[in-house]
Image (tube, rainbow, N blue to C red; front, side, top):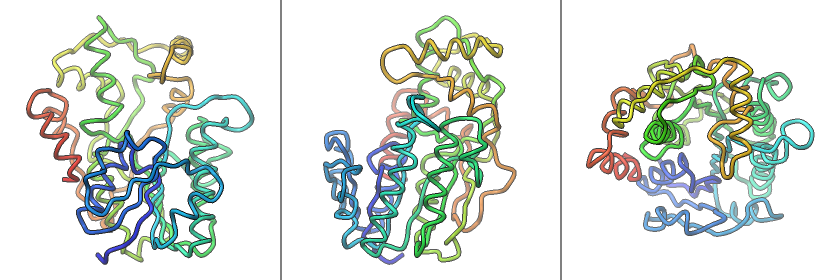
Length: 323
């Protein structure tokens, strides 16, 4: 792969940190904007990585950052957002729709042709009108911005839920089981096909120089399908805090989710999350060979990744090194 100069929007987040580490290991120059430089301190020692404290939604910022770049990677995503306003609400709109629009504009202004966009499994063409949750509809609208941009060699990846040693998915359920005597679980029968963050990062990097991936959308999944109940059970077993799990019936699950939304801080579950889980988060298609990965199983990595002690610390160091 020829060295590139790459703007990575969302590069300081969970997935982005792994993408940036892999890009740096291959000798690319990487520009990572962030609102809080301190939160990206784990990237500061990586070679040829420039962490810039800025607000990417401000006029002209992305155009300035994209100057001299030949590639952009779009990674920003949020799971929760206010329902106020039309369509999907202001938070999802800002992160999932307006930011891709600004990035496309910046690419056009600076002559950046190559763009890789991380979307979400479950998104469909036209889904901004038909999908069941505000999260998925906004993700579909953001995809449409990318896919209809002229003079742009885009590739879209749609991962299922992404797991890793520092994730905010399996670790949340592990912590809950350490604290609570039992777990009341909304959406317990929802199906997922978890994919390792290292595989997502590798696929993102692998497609950059492959023209056969231009203008294509790829599902990105692991080798196994789990229900949400099974994932919560595994999190409990691997951390040694296994607790009884009670699947909440429809109606009760939404009431519990509403109460979680009202609690301080980021909710662990929202009504919109339940809406997202009303459709399976799985793919019938095998992972495309051009992504260059053989997905690793959650069952294989999980015991060492979430089991605590030296093994977990090693997994975190390994992941941050992009390995």
